[in-house]
Each structure stands twice: as structure tokens, then as C-alpha cells.
Image (cartoon, rainbow, N blue to C red; front, side, top):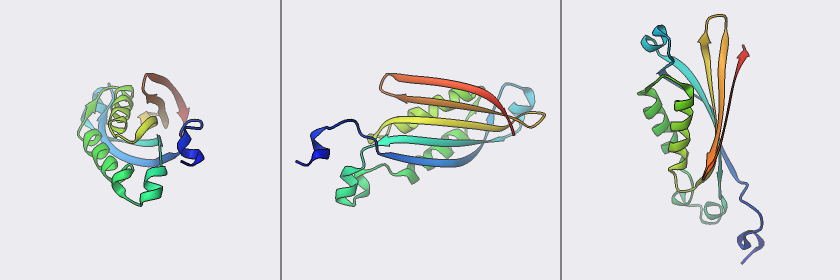
Length: 139
């Protein structure tokens, strides 16, 4: 058994999905309920990359193509009112993967309001941990 297998510390391996654009119905305003908007997802997932690193076998790791396909299908066909719900559902999909131990989800909604403002929400979850923060930023 090597030092990595002895349980020293926590797993700090990460898989990132960056700038995944998904058109969907999102928002509470009447115009948002009629028109698809593009949201942008960024994910940071904590995984143990030692098994696939040793085996070179896709079955031992996160298949991020399958994950991306499920996210695009689920979110693209959704009609959530709140980005909080969209972030929660995204985290649930990620955490349903056996290899994902923790996930940070960032949702950007670039066309959130007239005047070129955007909403950004960050969500982190795994096990019983849950942190959410939202804020308005200018583009």
C-alpha cells in the first residue's frame, strides 16, 4: 500500500467543466417565461483520480461526456423560475455520479436584466455541506 492509499488527508483531485452554455427557460418575468436564455455553467468536482490513473479505464472515473449530455438535456428542457433551483438540480446530477464526492456549481445568467447586468450564483454541495451565495455583477 502506498502513501496515497493509506488515507492521508482528503482527496483533492478535481475535474472541471468550464463555460458550458445551455439555452433554457429560466426566470420569473413574463418575457423570461417565453424566451430561452443561455445560462453558463462552471463546475468543480472533487473526485479520486487514482483508480483511473492506475487502470486507464473509463469505468473507473467520471465520464464527463455523459455528464455534460445529461446536464444539457435536463437543463435545456427545464423551465425553472430560479437559478437557485437550477444550481441545486445541477449539483444533484453531479453528485449522483458515484465518483463525485463534492461539487461547486457556478451559474451565470448573462442576460438577466436590461442594462447589461448578469446574475451569478455559486453553490457547493456534497454530503451534508451546502453553501450558496448570489450577487449582481456588471458586464
